Image: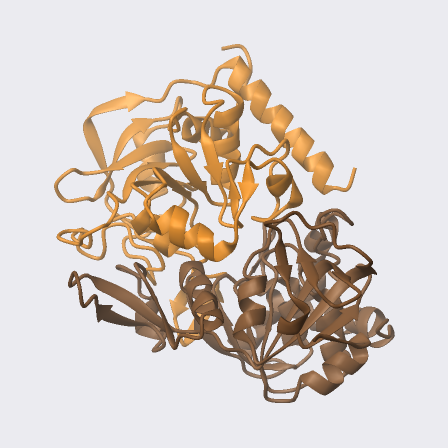
Length: 257
Length: 271
């Protein structure tokens, strides 16, 4: 490793590595989209990327600003209607991984993108659920990527927009035709995975140079660490170069150049 | 058969105060020109339906057209919040806005059920979500064949649907290309419909399986060149991503917003 890297780059590259060539990934906009396309441009050239706007098997040259940028459609194998996307492709069981971001996440990996505060009298109104509530239950598993902070990582989310494992870790038990739910959460500090029994998120790997104290400080509950705590491998030069080129192309494109 | 009208006349004759109106277009082909004409004509007390309210509803809400919003994702894509929508919800400015909130899957299913003439849509959805606790339009039913618990939502049946498309032929058949979203379903689900188009041509140039809405399924067609800007029309112009980013600052401030509205909507007439 010769190039310096930022914690954001560490997050995107680690998230990208979670994806493999044989996956069919339903991609959320923002950080998941960055990671998914980085995976496609590095170690997983044949990964199938699907966006909820109806674009099947897409390969954008720049990252889309919106979920329905023209670039997604032009570079897709085909584009279907939004009802077909949700009914046939997602609900029909063709998605191996749903890749989501969030505004709030709690210890059972429930996601809140609806509001902070009380529903009828919100402190901050957020955009809402979009595709996430059904992506999280109809995809075979869910990856989450989000920046680590006390505001984001809360003990209990104010509102469950999208279920992880519910308020008690048991929301998926005995529900037919439901995916495994979140299997990994990747932040700018670490990797977390649900405990196999309780489903509570546990830190399994710290990014290079990150301390336990930093993670404890940025988490709104008493976070646990795995007994075999690993150190996440550093980004390679190739990964950093491809990510930076992708972001530079994207910035130039969206600035209208 | 669809009637060819000016956008001004189409909005005047087909949209009434108090109507339930859907302006659809999933990030692509968003009918901004029609939305601006609705603002100019001072339509009031509308129930607005749209999966992704986007800037067009932020503008209509800020201009005081809406009393209620049925939606599933209300943000400025890739940028942040819709500040006019947020101001209406959090502070009641310029008037309170009632929210009926769904997921995309439910809204897409509800449009399709509306097009199919059904009273409800059934989906494997909302499992473990709090949304059913705040939206009484979400119920659960038992499958009569398997016993599986499934979500049910009422179909979407707007008084008027408005969409934008690339082109119509001289008989009023319409071609929608690219990200087609829920536009066909939204038109077929509605009592009346307005389709704005970039141009009218002799031949649609549609391939055999293209998304074509026949003239006899549409109420009115109006030409609105660049009628989807600052969103885009595949094959005609690109999305103005820079404006989507600029909107964040304009919409944050009531006075800036009103000045923008005055200059860019009220002082500009419909084509």
